[in-house]
Image 1 (spheres, rainbow, N blue to C red):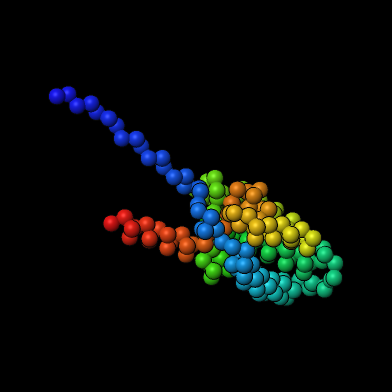
Image 2: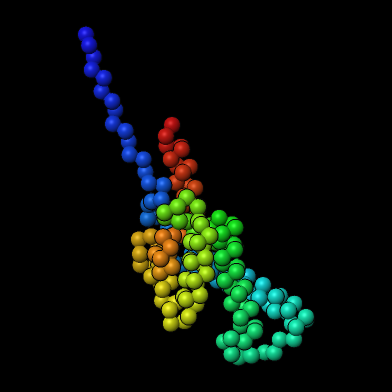
Length: 173
């Protein structure tokens, strides 16, 4: 007569910060997105240097700390920092290839994360000897380069994420 109430075990919620390995963008997609970004940075740098040279005469210099090279470095860092933060983890190259930088520990990228990943890490990895830090992305499960490990970030392929979400919606009926 008396039925014992048994509570169904609650399903463990999936960690919103963990993704299957196929969500992470591979080395070559990231490389081609970077090439597009470098073209954009080159164009922006040329425009900025041309504009500044109209106002202040800039003497060409082969030195690393010459005014032209410093302006190029500032444009390079500003491009990655501002676009990554203000476009929710996407630069122009990442937009074209459907990639996005995500935080593995927070819901959104914080300014601190973006400044370290896109500012400090890119500045360090810009050195030709240290560029090997990018090659690591080709051999890790989450396709993370050294800067991603430091900042707990990764780059995901948005098209794969969207396709997976659509497949889950269609499969649940």
